[in-house]
Image 1 (cartoon, rainbow, N blue to C red):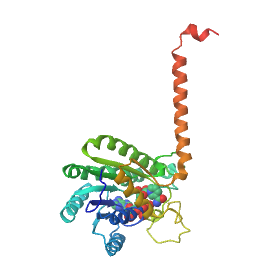
Image 2: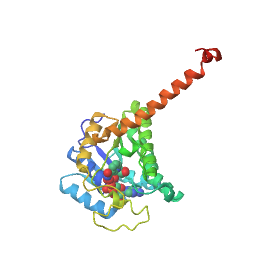
Image 3: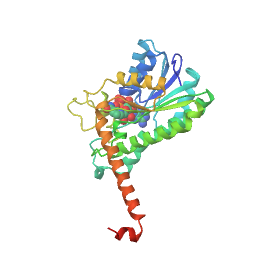
Image 4: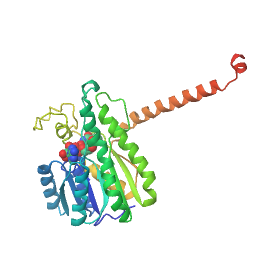
Length: 286
Ligand SMILES: NC(=O)c1ccc[n+]([C@@H]2O[C@H](COP(=O)([O-])OP(=O)(O)OC[C@H]3O[C@@H](n4cnc5c(N)ncnc54)[C@H](O)[C@@H]3O)[C@@H](O)[C@H]2O)c1
């Protein structure tokens, strides 16, 4: 468990804005040194300058999270400049909200799995060895409330990746506990960010600034939670080694509803099994 974050090196993907930048602010305030990674170097440069102005030790790194060799290069650069990474935040992702399954091409599906889910594997694969060598650490994977409650129409590829991140995180946590490496999975609801805009590239829509009224079904509403508040929750979860990081309690009933459906399926299974174990005589007796 990393209680004192002073001097700890934290690596955050998708950190040019939104939740990634919110986490960077919160970790920096806790005294950590921050490597901020993103594909969008222009916005990342502005974010890094802002963090530096606030007194943070920060290193901006260009990284496409789908590019495995680039992960290795980024890790080497960070280790040489800031020191060994002890906290990894796999946060970069894209939204597919608004796309019906029939509109999704196989190529689009593959790209979304690559950016949202394979990227988490890439990050862990890259940093696990150095983290073990450093004597432990912590991994934070950004899923979504969409990774805990299914059944949202026009969100299927996104939900598949975000459910995948929850499963990956739960498995990793069980496997890495003995190595002194904690794992948390962040499952936010609506957070103020540019997700509706940064997801346009993968959807083949030009990345142009548009009026906030044109959300194009791509999340995230400007009325969402302040990403810095999300960052504070993440820092707290790392300190306490919490598995699930929930920021939007208003979604409780949706998650309960999903679990009730699962429990009802278990009830049906128990009833069916006890019926099939009855002998023919028992079945015909009144
Ligand atoms: N905003 C929300 O309401 C919300 C809710 C739940 C989960 N999330 C998740 O939070 C994470 C961060 O999203 P956000 O809302 O802060 O949006 P954001 O657009 O502000 O941040 C996403 C960042 O990821 C970067 N990115 C995209 N593809 C990349 C790639 N291939 N390599 C490296 N960087 C890449 C983008 O440039 C962007 O800076 C995502 O995983 C998203 O699914 C967001």
